[in-house]
Image 1 (cartoon, rainbow over the protein chains, first blue to last red):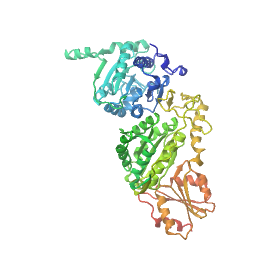
Image 2: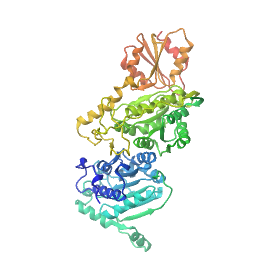
Image 3: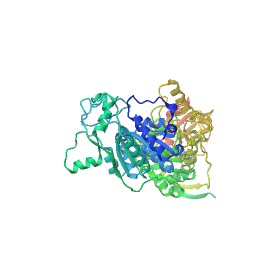
Length: 262
Length: 366
């Protein structure tokens, strides 16, 4: 398997910081798209604004790098006007959960036939590390210098409640599982939402006692819990360790979808 | 065979869009533009097109731009508050050179203002409302017939210049019912295609790059960031930014004569009304009622880019009188171009100027 032909190599070097998790997510997405056998000329990548949203610029297909938070609204136009095109949206936690929350809800409700890959690094990276709606309580950022005092948004729960047909969460550590989940998402008619917890050593780790990239990767590995294990612990009334988040497929269903390829 | 009907302005706008080949409408209900969305909702699916009621106006214009990049003729319609919400993505459409049509059936503002009353308060917003320098095209209909004709024209101009194009109507024209003749076919100009060997944002002498919609195999990157001719971000080179922004402005401004669309009545007159949209109807009434007086009238159907040379059609003008349903937004533009006095005749509140009001204004300069 090679994803070389999907890359815009004349855009290199990329803008990502060393140790950033976004490159891993792009690689997994391209591997999944390649596994689907999609043609480049039939595939469109879209994004909003932020580190994650620079991804389409590095992919050698038609790509629409839009305004902050609005990628899914743009994607609605692309997909409904040309349902025969495959549409993948890259977004981040600030882009999707804050400024783009309304479009996210309604794209899930409509079950628009697109796959949304959200690189959740729990911080506004592009602007230098401000607290986002997914910054965990207590975490330090430039706008939460005394620790975040707000609860963090679980975007997968939002997607499930709003009606998305496929929802999964993995991390940039779980490369094989993530690629497989994206393939599942690409195959599922309707909106597929894949949250990827990614490391941002530059703007998140540095302020939160994870100075090394490996510290952050280890955090993601050790705090990720498979959905069946999580459910078993809950059923048995056992305690869930602090900071744990579930990984795996969170929902798969077959509600009517919009903009499905004819 | 053309057909003659009695129709509402907003419905005529939708019919014009359909005749022009519009096949995507993304909108959000807002008075007094809603009949356009309602007509499109009823008619588009039967014409093989897509109607979608988006979650807000930010989403409406975003969906329209997305659809436009697939090559579809795409449109939205709104009014003041919704128009304000669209501003960021209108700048995005200007920066990415996306052909699309935005209808604004203007109502009284600021803010929620007067939802059911007419105004022309968004005439500067449609030109300057998004941040940064760019240029746009704005047409102003004054009849139900022109709601149809100028909607068709707006699509052609949007495609010709790859620029967001505005139909700046108002509540009076949008809700008025008049006789209209709908031709069986209309002239359609599509964007010039992106030629082999040309870069996606590389323009020729007319400064308008060729267009390759998504799915045509050209792998085009579209971004609102300052970009080079390949479409790739180039955000720190001062020359790259200046070159791009100057081209975006010049491609419209240098085509002012091509875009210009205006009507001249009594060019030898000393006293000259300059109007666009609904207030022109009152001026037409005044001229009709006073056939013995020489009253000049310049009626702009295209307001932006501003055709300053149209003012030269009145070589003997001593004064330009400007009835507008705002505090004088376009009169300032006229003032920039002429030495004679320019007299704004503002009318706020939603009522059209009466002939008596215009006659009173004329008295002062007789």
